[in-house]
Image (cartoon, rainbow, N blue to C red; front, side, top):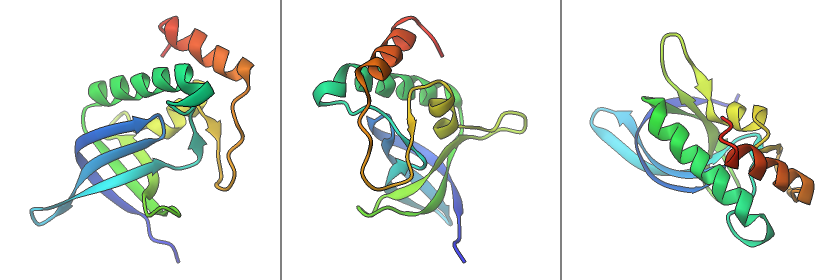
Length: 138
């Protein structure tokens, strides 16, 4: 049986790219831990190489989403092959629970990803992401 753990994120230390973060989580009892997180189920453009223009815009979108979200939490689904927490980053609230993972996917800023070799973004996909984000889309 796989256990999922939900913990408050008390600090975002670094946004590495659109699907990877370094955060501090509150484990309770005055214990906190810095954790590298890989957003589960999605892949965003890389911030280097041929995907860099779109990747940097998606990273900026994630920075803005986190700044405006208010309290957020990590739902950890396990560890990936690099030892990062594989999970969901959710906005916490009584009426508005939103997953960053889902928002990135629904807006077209991420592709579905189930592990293994990642399918590169096509030029058309990258251009569409750039057009949406430079046009002020949310």
